[in-house]
Length: 91
Image (cartoon, rainbow, N blue to C red; front, side, top):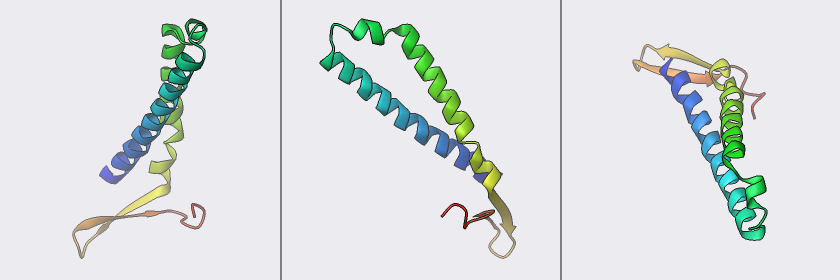
């Protein structure tokens, strides 16, 4: 169970950090290339909508991880072994 939890949040925060870097780069590009039009494209409302939308999209897109991973207890090594349910599909 912990593996599902850990894998989900690992994917979620990886996606969120990637999207954050992308949107910050776009905002910087707009600031440099179109300094007089920045107020039209970048304001508090657009930033809030962007942050909420990419957080929701990342949350739902990352839900595939707990569904596709099967974890079993390894009695010999007293640990947990996690595998993909259908590994050929994800190669």
